[in-house]
Length: 612
Ligand code: AGP
Image (cartoon, rainbow, N blue to C red; front, side):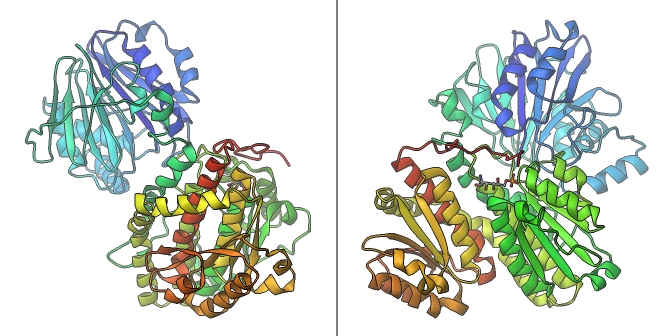
């Protein structure tokens, strides 16, 4: 997820671009750059670092210029370096591009441009391919060159291009990544998101997938993929800037919960061959020899990432038949684990900077154990010190309570489990294909769960929950780590003391805490243990507990036994944790709202625990 801004008009372009990029740093902030069209050339300033650093670096070359483009980056392909920062220029330097998205066939196009067309590349990014492609197709009309270029591209893009040959003209194209046009008086704008525009105009229109636009100070023309003009309705934005940065949601946490279908879809992109029903291990590969000798996997993480590790244990053992030990990093690093040959360590960390997790990574590596990292931040310490990295592509996660990053961590462990299972032949191809099909269905199932009707049902439950100072989450099998994650979410933002209990453990002590009306959220998505979970729900009911069940459509026995029920779309049990956690995230959010706590920045907590 990156931030793009473009401007053409009569004002100081560099000021407008820098100001717009600052409003988009929540979309990415590891590097930034601008390109301005001046005196028959395009001048570029770009570097790793913040937009403020970029602003300080601008010299007089960037003054008195009326058109240009800017970009603030969240790295996916290529580390956050000066070379990899956008904008990217073509071979001749006459075409310059900024881009948000993932060019899935960038390797093929890069190879063709180098071997067939003699281009040379300066960066590791997929975006640079676009700059050279547009130059390759440029024949005097930038719009036509962009149209031809993106017709050869697979993947997602929001791109804006300029050329020194067509001063003050911006050309943009959009597929899967957002682009919004801002209409001014004698000036026009383009941006990834509304916050970048609000200081200048509230008259906007959203480019739809497959649409292009040619933008000058006086005119905006929109076309479809076939080059036919498209009439766009202008809508007036009535958000204030703060609301706009949250996409109109009241909090980043809710925005990030709602972004989960896209985050899951992006994290699977390029890693699944849908036609073959197989996982394509682009970043994580293990040799047949290593695989044959692999005896044990350690998963090391903290907090929410640890809960993803628990799901990872269950699915890797089930699908690949490899013993997995999951540990919180703060324990792992001090207990002298029996690390040695024929082992693999998987460290999971959204920020990639968590001190305990980093210590666990270093301990494993010091014992000669290969480390695979799952992290959301390209260039993070964990990503630089691991042997291999499987990045989650959730985009920046601002709220302290992790939601979309967690869901993409689950996707990562499923991909690893399926890949290992197929490689070790413990997972039959047809079973793997069935799981891949189930993974690909998750984004639309998540969208159903995040529908207004679903959310309304959860909100009414939270008003009751919010009046209590304690609550229980119950689950068995794969539902238990979901119960743990739900309890963590609730306690860390609503301050309700929520406890997760393996449902079968109730009678071994925790049942003593069940009293009349006590909120109990029961996860009941696993058919294999459903009867057992139902009897635990019965135990709670018998003591007056108020049970809210999260179960699958069709599990009708559950509804008959509880006060209220939330139905998930039917899903393969092994994938149910991806869906089941979402109602618990929303329960935590609305309970916190009802209690007036600080949802995005809960007391005593930090987004990344970089100290012990
Ligand atoms: C998540 O909701 C929590 N804020 C916290 O447990 C977090 O998951 C933990 O600190 C690990 O962070 P990391 O993924 O960045 O390593």
